[in-house]
Amino acid sequence: MNDDLPRIDSREAFIQALRWGFDSAFAQQARCITCVDPSFEDWPLDDPALLSDLTAWVRLPLRRLVLLAASYEQVPRRQPRFTAWRRDFAHAIQALQAPEEFVPGLPTLLLDDRRVSVHLIDPVHWRGRADLDVRARLLWQEKVDVVLQRSEPGFAVSTLGL
Image (cartoon, rainbow, N blue to C red):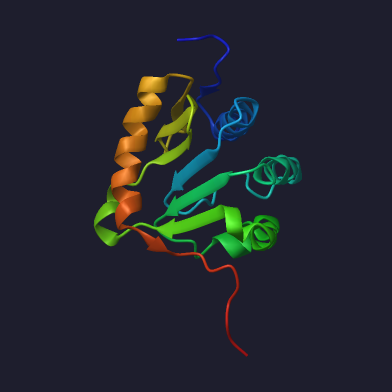
């Protein structure tokens, strides 16, 4: 294992690893970043610095952010900046909800389309792995693609109502 890779052994280390994953994907000029989590409650999506970097990245041609969750119910309340930011960039963001049969096995994962993978293996003890291994990323992408193909839009950009 490369010593430069973040070590995930706490909640704070997980957040730092996610930030490392995003930064690495931006540096490698990834065209697609895929984020998977049951609810995204613990992700740093509301961080102003991350939103600024995501804005610069998503403004580049052919960039796409894919989100896959079991539920987005808590996101507007827990990630209000991200929710508002997403409205402006809805053309480049796909938020899908996993079918019920896939929810129990839904990982916590960040992947790009190059080499980056950040995986929270044990969410109870905050243990995980960050990697720049193309093979590991491809294996995860194949597993995630199976769920993505069966998923439906699940996080409306705006809500209708009175």
